[in-house]
Length: 316
Ligand SMILES: Nc1ncnc2c1ncn2[C@@H]1O[C@H](COP(=O)(O)OP(=O)(O)OP(=O)(O)O)[C@@H](O)[C@H]1O
Ligand SMILES: [Mg+2]
Image 1 (tube, rainbow, N blue to C red):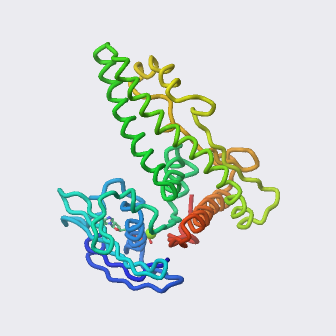
Image 2: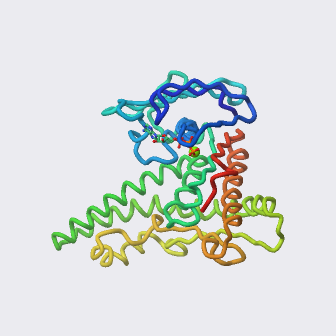
Image 3: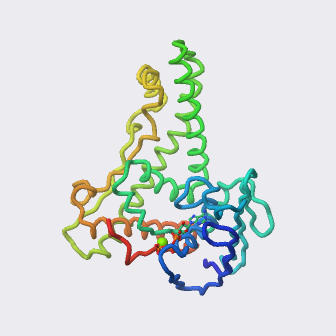
């Protein structure tokens, strides 16, 4: 797959841009702040219907404007496809593929695979578990629609359960039947998420290690990823029931797949603590190249690889 053309209107600092690309390698040059990373983010939008960097769509609208539009023409499996993603203040985000409106965005994610490697990715190693979960969630979601739907369901029920916990604890009265109905819904989605993450990591690890080994060419460096979950050997519904008093006290759900983590290690020690800058960077690139390989194999479409300042700005 490759992106033939990209058009932007009022996307971040770009008022209007029309670009045509080569099939293999394309480079953006320009001063700091000129909008190179923003171009990569626009391409990311076409694939994921959201920004890689900003949480809210409106943050990507050019200052003092009412909306943005990103349009890409892809060549994929010898066919031309046009994808348009746009947003206007006060309206719903819209997505079109070849003039057909796409209502369910989760069905679009994964059709035009993109892998982005950016300096901010170092936070995957340094930050809390949320970013690591997000990295694997984004990847697995592109391969498994049920996984993405389960995540959406799980997060929705989790929010509702947390709000129930707050209400019950404020009123000092608990409707156990009502909370049990949420436990069941959470457990159904959570169980699928847990099993899928566990199986995925087993498949991912050898591919990742192969890329790391190739990058560092150092036989004594052994990298690993360990999946940690409250659900290991435990039924989530029972766990939620068991922890209900604690949850009521803290007014939030304290067990479940929203607390999962992926431990990154180098020679069995935590990478964050023992890895040098170069080792951490190689680890990240290894993760992303494994992501690329898995997407290419599973989707039978080579993703677009977006490299942001890969050789320059990687100061930690
Ligand atoms: N919504 C927005 N409206 C207008 N400008 C924006 C918006 N969001 C970001 N910008 C501007 O875009 C610029 C940053 O662009 P970008 O990060 O793409 O630059 P860059 O070319 O990658 O720079 P560097 O070489 O430093 O990485 C900043 O000056 C920022 O203020
Ligand atoms: Mg940049």
